[in-house]
Length: 187
Image (cartoon, rainbow, N blue to C red; front, side):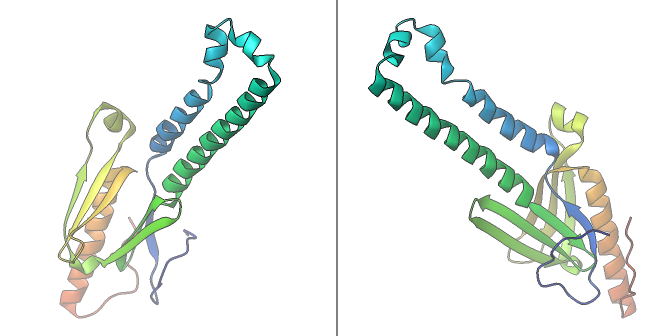
């Protein structure tokens, strides 16, 4: 059982898939910031006169303040990347798809679409690393105002496409029969 807050949950609605971007994506984003953390000591190592400048109390205090602010910004950007990664979520239930995208630290876009309105689903894996790590994009085409839902850089895109397709077929078949059974396919 997946425990996740579902906005505007409908009666008998169950979460089938809860998808976040592939962990490699956050690894690449966060790897960049520690590399920047090693930049400030480089002038000290390159310039011999830098030793004498540190002995000046004013310049020494200025360096401490600069490094403090510099490293606080690095932590802030690492936190921002993690929040963006962790709060980008795509939820597939037995009735709809919910796309929750974190744009910035305090900016989020949430959209949803009923499974019965889905027209086409496409899975895309481009590149060497995405092929080896099995991640890519899943495009869900609808007839609604927002034409396309994009599951960006998600693990197992072909499996996600297969599950959404089977859910859509199940719903459309049951709508033609005149009613919904309570237990949709989970695989």
